Length: 177
Length: 195
Image (cartoon, rainbow over the protein chains, first blue to last red):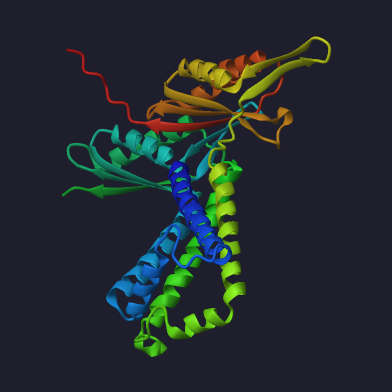
């Protein structure tokens, strides 16, 4: 997202530089050199188009709606915080190790999927809780047995990750009929 | 963990400000296009506005020109800020006023650290960089992004980084402490098919 934001910033700043510079040059040329004709941009034509269109015209409304949409996208890009990082425990005080929620989710889903009888896994990682949903075939192994195995597997996986603040892992089973 | 450089934070603030400006401007124009506003059948550039501009001719146009220039200059500063990544070009190893100093290129150190990190168990990909951080001793922070397999033991990876990668980086810079941040990401490793 940081790279995308940089690209948006480059495009926006370049557009603002061009627009601002052209405005300043046109004003200076018109006021100091007493030019009656535009220097760089045919703003007289733009003014004619604006005089010919009323506010209720479809094209004007579309441009306005586009401006609102672009504004909403910009605000969304500005407020988007990116992945949430979770600290992992380390011995070295000068070392900060972090991981993201997607990684924790992937590791737990992968671990749960290794149990026999599990044919689908999905995990949701929150700050205090992790929900893991597994889809099981109750035959030939009973669901309770699969649940017990997956609980153990998830505990081992959480130990392997080594989060500083370990959230509670809650397991949900969905049986295939 | 700090999120990005000053330029990244400035980008986010400016996006929100410009976005709100666009929403406000676009929303106001949409309101004018509604029959309820009373301006819906008026031209976008009406005679009232043109008369007002004609009455304030010199002041209005010089203000517009000045605002355009200010916007162009501020946007230029914003554009130049995009080139700052926060990476350190040169790291000082030692300094003696009489004998001179020893420096190492930040990219060379980062490459060496990434090479060491590649040797850590379960690490499939590694990237490293040396970044400026005024909040820590020495003013530098080593940042590593390690991609590991999704069955990796993260604690083993952390321990190996602590015991092999970091001491070597600190030794190279002749420092007892070099603050470091490691970002661990898991990826799915598909088993290789041997025929």
